[in-house]
Image 1 (cartoon, rainbow, N blue to C red):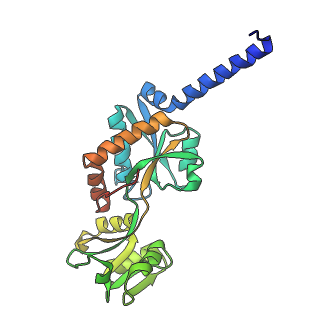
Image 2: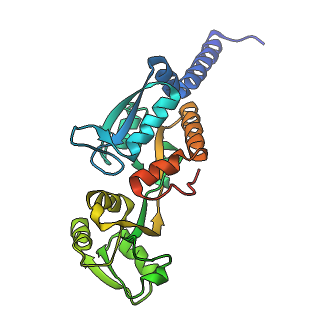
Image 3: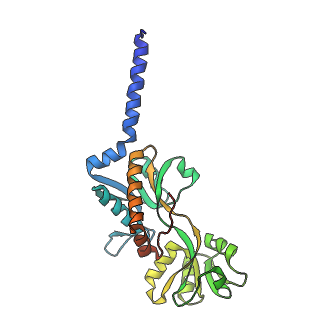
Length: 263
């Protein structure tokens, strides 16, 4: 079969584009391994997932997860501070190779980025003193609970708690936490992040996680098409899940094991 110069040029261009597309799909992992550095976007204002200590050193569950991934890949970690608003754009514009920033997975986000398997829980729950036996929602009957009005935990608790729970509703998280810390209520309904920070700052309360209201796990965000990098991250997460590392990290920062996380 004879080809015209135009047909040959078109075929050649298609081959070049196909090859370039294949190379691009591997570019993030290749770039990381070549530079021996991985840029990971993390929060620095959302404890206990990400914050800075008095020496301005980043700390938190997301920071530790970023450190784990870099260590397992054998590369240097470069932390990139982000906010909720810019964490996905940073990934799309290649300012970061990965996003580890309490990122939940939903259909809208899946249109623009890919996700790893889940690495940590993000949850709303009921918290109370260790001396108080609360094993089921029925055990909350007759007890008072501090909760932020209209928050997810307020809505979820109303679905499962007995009718004789004494709700003390407040207008924001700070007021809700302050009421529980001051002893105005026996229990607290809040996000795991808010409660963990409260427990850390007020060890004298001897408070602990009691019941799960809603679970919305955290995933690592990965740019679309970076299948090799995604596979590597999933391999690290799977190993950390199997050997108990994820449970230990979650227990340290959230006071609750990671549990059965989705893939």
